[in-house]
Length: 266
Ligand SMILES: NC(=O)c1ccc[n+]([C@@H]2O[C@H](COP(=O)([O-])OP(=O)(O)OC[C@H]3O[C@@H](n4cnc5c(N)ncnc54)[C@H](O)[C@@H]3O)[C@@H](O)[C@H]2O)c1
Image 1 (cartoon, rainbow, N blue to C red):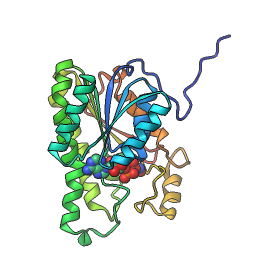
Image 2 (tube, rainbow, N blue to C red):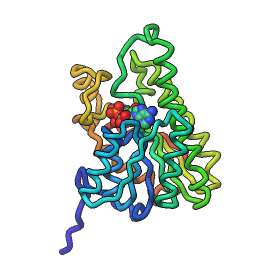
Image 3 (cartoon, rainbow, N blue to C red):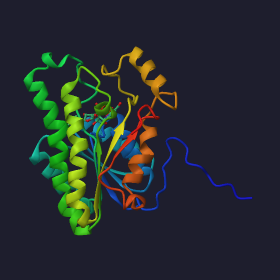
Image 4 (cartoon, protein in one colour):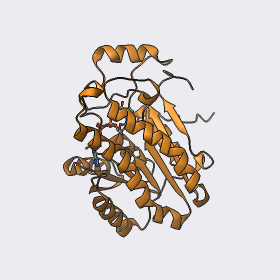
C-alpha cells in the first residue's frame, strides 16, 4: 500500500505552480514575512525579501540559500516610491519577471498601545504611510510585469483585529481596515489582467518577535476564544499565503480570508 505523505508544519505546501515564480515579500526580515519568504523558497519560487532593515533581509536570504533555496534581499522602504522603484528594477534585471507580491511590511510589533486620543499625529501618519500607502505603491509598481505576463497574485496582510473592535491602536486598525477595503476594488480593476487580489486577516499570531500589542493575559483570552485552542503560529498562515499565490486559487479574488483558528466566524 502506498501512503501519501502529508504536509507537516514548516514544510513546503505543493500547489504545483510556484516553481519558477518570483515572489516579492515586503517586510520579510522577521516574523511572518520571514516565514512566508522561506515557504516560497521551499516551494521552488524565488523569494525576494524587500525589507527596510538591510541586515535582517540579508540574514533571511542567507538562511534560504543555506537551505538550498533561491532568494534575493533588496533593502526597501515601502513608504518610498523611489526605493520601491529601485527594488522592482533590481528584481526585473535579475529575473525578468514578478509573479507574486505579498504586502506584508507594516508597522506592527514596534507599536505602542495607547488610547486613540493620545496617539501623536506624526505617529498616526507614519503608520498609515507604511501600512496603506506602502501596499498601494508596491501593488502599482508590480503591475507592468504582471500585466505583461497576464498573470499575477497580490496578497495583502490585513488583520482580524479590524473585525474585533480591539482598542488602543486606532492607527493600526484604520490601516488594516483600509487594506481590507482596497482588496475588492483592486481585484475588480485587475481581474481582466489575470491578476487576483486577496487579503488575509490573521488572528494574533506569535512569531519570534516580542511585542506589546498582546499582553500575556490577552493571549490566554484569545486562545480560549478560538475553536482550535492553541496559540497561532506563522506556519498556520503559510498554507493560505501559498494557496492564494498559486494557480489553484485562479478564480478566487477580492476576498478577505480570516485565519484565526475559528476565533471569529463571518
Ligand atoms: N503577528 C500577528 O499577530 C499579526 C496579526 C495580523 C496581521 N499581522 C500583519 O502581518 C504583517 C507581519 O506581521 P509581523 O508580526 O511579522 O510584524 P513585525 O513587526 O514583526 O514585522 C514587520 C516587518 O516589516 C518591516 N518594515 C517595517 N516598516 C517597513 C518599511 N517601511 N519598508 C519595508 N519593511 C518595513 C520591519 O522591519 C519588519 O521586518 C504586518 O503587516 C502585520 O500588521 C500580524
